[in-house]
Length: 319
Image 1 (cartoon, one colour):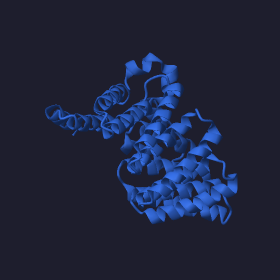
Image 2 (cartoon, rainbow, N blue to C red):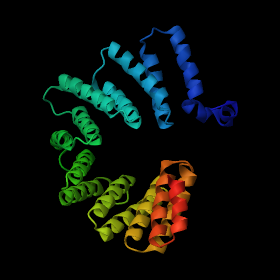
Image 3 (cartoon, one colour):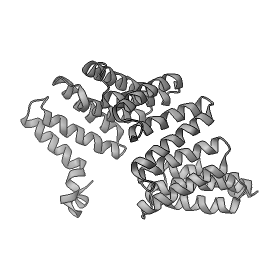
Image 4 (cartoon, rainbow, N blue to C red):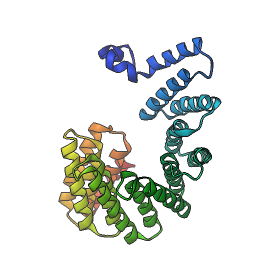
């Protein structure tokens, strides 16, 4: 952000301008007590913005300050849980999985203290986030225990037909897949998807991500036609909901291309993978991980065609 950037459209820009918001925070520090809630809120706002910009060190600094102020004022409840969840995302992106698990567990303990044995939305969500942290660390049995407890709580709160129930079922399915129980995982993913279809409708943006995950699970089971059907359905939804080019469209195109490659449809594979490559370059940039990953997929497709020299060039680009 610079003066030119700010001048372009200041009315819209000032709410997301970290330079402006940092100056505003310093003014608050000069006139308020150290632990004033206004300073806490300013730190939360900045921490969230830094996170969206992948400026993880600054995000961590501001969110930890906000959490410290909140706890000085008593803390606990939904507000602390929301802050901890943001901070855990930062730790996860930094590869600090132990720290992410630590703050999630502390938040869960605090919520259990506040709500006791009562079924409560925040407790169920906290159980899910602890489960996700355990899953990311490869502790699948422990993750499943947390997911099952969250599932029971969500069902008690909302009944079977609810998006939160579907979400935790999807997480449980991932655990099953990693435990070598792929068929059970697929059945659970299909169940979660059916709940979301009934909850949101068949053409909602919240259906696209489950279709992508389900397609990948079918690929892992060697069921390529079923995977392709899910990817094509998801691609159609993304294009209707987001007619502009976006990352999710690129992800569906890439996965469709990879299925074509596995099916021996090499020309189709290259065409779809190159489309994904162009979209990634436009949306997330030429140096992004997405561009690197799809470049490696293009290399595989070229190698399978016997175009070894071209494939080697792409491998080098991707790596």
